[in-house]
Length: 296
Image 1 (tube, rainbow, N blue to C red):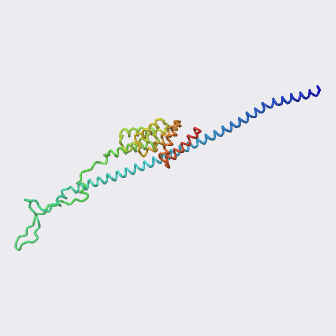
Image 2: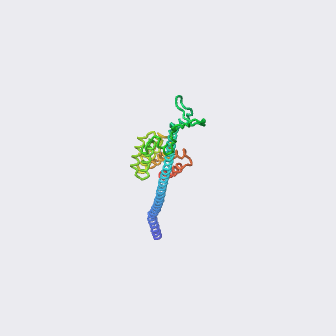
Image 3: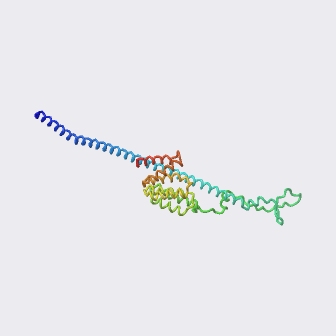
């Protein structure tokens, strides 16, 4: 009996040892599995971050393209306005010349058919009585009919070409600032737009100048000042055609400043106020980027 019990005890002891050794091995295997899962999750997160970065880059490229297109459209509008103004100036000048010509003594003489009392009426006789001497009347003094060249010389000189109207000076100042923006000189562009708004606060171009001032700050990553500029534009000119773009840029600035809740609220307002527009589509794209950044 003792001999049989001894091998049995040895077997139980061996089994216990095997079990004791197996527990750490199982735990090690479990830890290895967890490490693999963590590594896989990290790889997925890295790929997601790469996708987010790629999406943000694409959105920024689209923003730049939209900004360039807006600049081209605005430049064409300005050229059209200048052309209309030139045509208007030419018409006014021509009308002024014609009015002066119509008011000359020649026109008055043509309207007076009867000689005034006490003056000598000189008329060529229709017939000469027989035997009477032929009386040759003195030549009548007739005012010469001015040729176009003489008429132009008779008109008082108009304002010299060097004189610039206030409207033209205003447009030139705006174009000067806008050209600096197109040339990429954003600091100079901001300085010129600030000077323009200080000099022409009531200008019809003031909302545009305010918007491009905000853009000058935005492209140089001065997001806080850009945000304040766009918010000021919306407060001063809520009905301006630049209001939708300014509201979108408010959301963009809040996004760059990582003000996620405020950015989401602003961009959702863009989508709600201006559905099926370019600014709405851009706002939707930035909202997707916010969800990727915040995970919700």
